[in-house]
Image 1 (cartoon, rainbow, N blue to C red):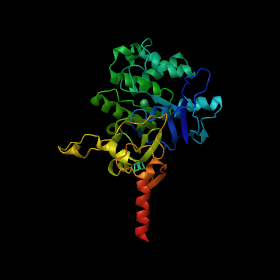
Image 2 (tube, rainbow, N blue to C red):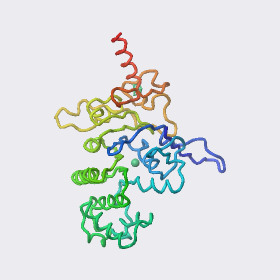
Image 3 (cartoon, rainbow, N blue to C red):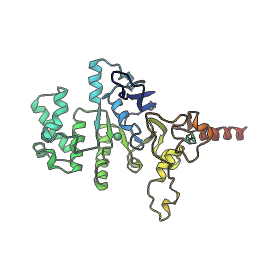
Image 4 (cartoon, rainbow, N blue to C red):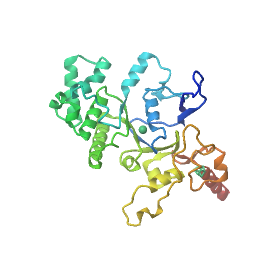
Length: 325
Ligand code: SF4
Ligand code: MG
């Protein structure tokens, strides 16, 4: 039940505003060791806030984040240090996330310095190894970020994220700013590293196409909530939630008639300050019913860990039950 509500500043000085941005509004999900969990949704649906909550960069308004059975939210300093080392992050913009004043060697060694790992000599050795691991050269340590291409800079970011031997890496739109061919190279690198170091990924993207070839399971987010979660096969071949269906229909298909069944959603994503009552998707849903306006749909298990929150699924289940009587 992870929540993050950011209070809005009040227009009246010294008065507390009662309004807040409900960026993350009740998330429940598991991530299993060695898997890649994809998190998709339009911009502003709370994906990055979720990532920052998991990484303990911000504290939740409500709910917990458990890592290996321990609640990260109210952890002692020492435990938190360990978990911070174990959960690393790669951000979207390879241009902005590297300080231009430091050379690549300093940038990659930075987490080691912050966490006081090893001496200067062993850090240099580690930097050389990391550069090779991500497909760069040892001498690149003396160069500066502006001397590299976007894809190479993302390799530098990956080396930095690997420096402390993490168990989980959160990739927040890690390939979104890159050209498609470079995207594929970085995704392949991430996959190889996953096998080699037994990494677990939370892979955040607004692009269902990118997630498709990367993830074991996928969670679809809308307005701070997960509306559907399942294996990538469940999501692509048998989507259950109308929002997932709409997202999938927007992916251009190869056939010449491909786009004719595209579902165009009405309007834009509603404000997370006053999210709609009932089903958060009801204002845009092409198959909304009267009760969707007032009743919040429950999560329905549509088979083997594939879950979605939509009243229609409830009705389908009742129908099936009725038929089996
Ligand atoms: Fe659409 Fe209603 Fe299902 Fe929400 S609960 S997705 S509005 S049909
Ligand atoms: Mg984001």
